Length: 77
Image (tube, rainbow, N blue to C red; front, top):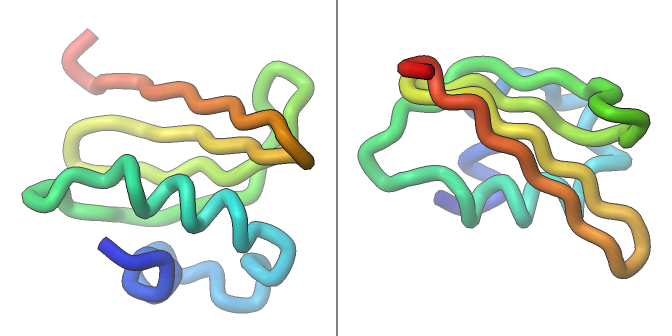
């Protein structure tokens, strides 16, 4: 999935201007057969980033300068 496809699926068009690097990283993490739901800008463990819900899991990505933080929350757990 490309960052542009992800951006159109999560429905946060105006809010995503500052999340370009997070979108790129998030797009790499989405499986080809995974259905993307909605997304939100949020803070998690003191880090600002992008949270996206899919049909399988919730994914958080925060990128700042040279650091990248990701968290995955599988719904089955």
